[in-house]
Amino acid sequence: MAATGLGVLLGTVFKTHQQSSTFAAVFIVILAAIGGIWIPVFVMPEILRKMSVMSPLGWSMETFNNIFLRGAGVQEILPEVTALTGFFGAMLIMAYFYNKFKVRS
Image (cartoon, one colour):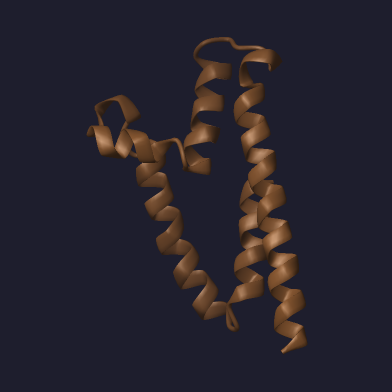
């Protein structure tokens, strides 16, 4: 859902497919690097560890690790799932308002 929300926002902001796909590819690579997809967060320097808490890919990676490696239940993954759902909602709201004001002008 978080990826879909981001896609909707990017599709609303950019005018062409080439613009959105280029930006999205670079943005996702940055989020993946910061979120711990490429390198585990505990190996990163302190500044990147602090930035990793802002990455939706980091939240999802932590959720998958909790479920598959640690056998976590719903209660343990609820904070990350809530953050991912909130990110989805925030992206949709931003896309809605951007589109509303873009159409008006």
